[in-house]
Amino acid sequence: MAVSLQINLGGLVMKNPVTVASGTFGYGAEYSDYFDVSQLGAVTVKSLSLEPRAGNKPPRIAETPAGMLNAIGLQNVGIDAYLKDKLPFLREKKCVIIANIYGSGPDSYATLAQRLEAEGGADAIEANLSCPNVHDAQNARGGKLVAQHPDQVRLYTQAIKAATKLPVYIKLSPNVTDIVEPALAAEEGGADAVSLINTLIGMVIDTETRKPVISNIVGGLSGPAIRPVALKMVWDVARAVKIPVLGMGGICTEEDAVQFLLAGARAVAIGCASFRRPDAALRVVHGLENYCRQNNISDINDIVAGVKV
Image 1 (tube, helix red, strand yellow):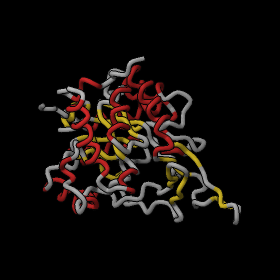
Image 2 (tube, one colour):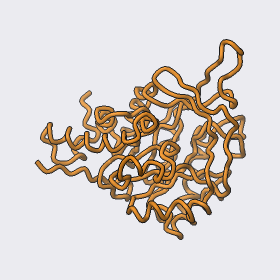
Image 3 (cartoon, helix red, strand yellow):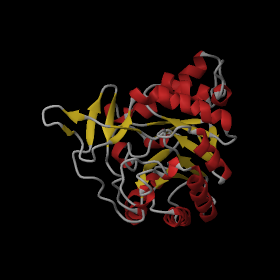
Image 4 (cartoon, helix red, strand yellow):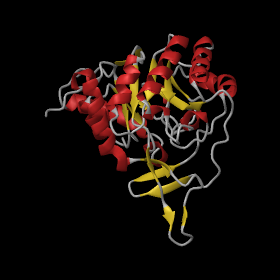
């Protein structure tokens, strides 16, 4: 039985609905020893900023039950080094590229998007308005994130959309009272899709030293522990917006991915599962094809938002 896994994520055609979560897959080449990364629907690269970032000082990672806490702080090589040193590998492999970007204000996001389009550095833009582990102008408002202010989400989205013709996805934070509000604001601002969820804020304390385990004190919780929360938020947002949803948060297997698709996600991203098993994302691709074949589903799009409630 022939199965079509092709999807359209807000104007970006992907041969299957699987990408990777930004910050968990480097710039693609890091995983090329394990499998052909071009087999994924898209490669989402680590967050890019105008200038290189060293990130937070270590320790920056702590293991938690069914997950991990991280406060990397968006360490990255910067846009110039990405275009010069990282992009050639992805283009040589003919990967579909989603470039995650991070800036200190609407203008820097717009500049990043403009450069990526002009220099062929991406096929779509994912704007990170929701990283909890940085200390600069973006979250200087009482320590809050842009993604926690719907009016700011709308403003940033409009600025990015005005700078590029590439599809623009807005990555949202679960650290809000109602994630539907910023999702609607992103849609109103012209976003082509929304990505959710980013990590939940948490902390770990060393009972011997009585100090936080990570130097940033708090960090972002990811992994299977957050999957039920992510799934519910995807379901909430998918019913409220007309644009596609890219779902992520603790997805490890094809069964997890199917749950997100049934909840309304058009595509899914595999995150820290890749740390435990480098080929996790590719296994999900193959698993989705097998799931469709076993259930006589000829087109993966037929199960999107198919949950029965």
